[in-house]
Amino acid sequence: MVRPPGPRLAEGIVTYIDRRPVDGELAARQHEVYVSALAAAGRRIRALPASGAQPDAVFVEDTVVVCDGLAVLTRPGAPQRRAEVIAAEKAVRELGLEVARIEAPGTLDGGDVLQVGDTVYVGRSGRTNEEAFCQMARLFGALGRHVVSVPVTGCLHLKSAMTALPDGTLIGLPERVDTAVLPGLLVAPEPSGAHVLVLSENEVLLAASALRTAEHLSAEGYAVTTVDISEFEALEAGVTCLSVLI
Image (cartoon, rainbow, N blue to C red; front, side):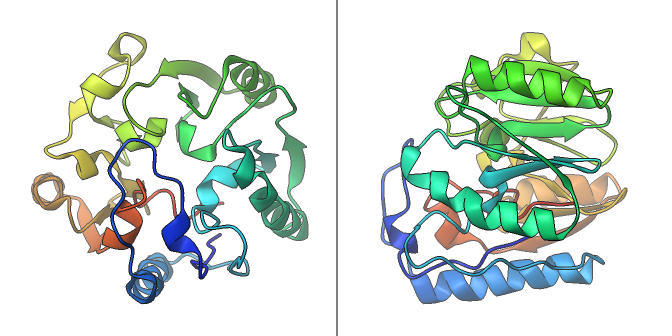
């Protein structure tokens, strides 16, 4: 599931980095290349309509978390983003998924949820609170998942600081997460190298800015595709933010 950037993209929320101008036309081209990379990896694309009113709607990952046949609609931590969930709900219902939702006073951004095998890591960030974690623990625990709370500091989401490789190895920035609750963490060679999107058991997608990480993972035998997402990185995004893999 993807959602093209809208005309107000440059107004997207920036929290932990300095704002810089965003080129909307370049962002649209970069998004097309990103979607093409997913399609080339064998993914069928479900594109939601672009939003003219919601600047951050392109970051569709934050609106829904899918596990097996369950789609959990989020309640984003930024109130102005909550209307983005409407389009995601319509799409997952059309796909025939079972639907649950995070209820108030819980707040959850999908970028704070990392699924690795039977473990679900939920970031405790500025966008996701304890109440939402407890709701996720109940929902995903019923699916046989082990749900782990991971305190996050100095960045927007858990997946801003940590993702996982196809074999389940966690990779990221140890200074941004509580490593005491993790089984281990491979240190990413650069910050954007913490953002790995798994395409298959031997394929990964990285931002073009993560050159050293791409070289390292290629040397480890992974098929690595890189895409330029500079205009989305200007809004604190990584490659995971722009899609929901179902």
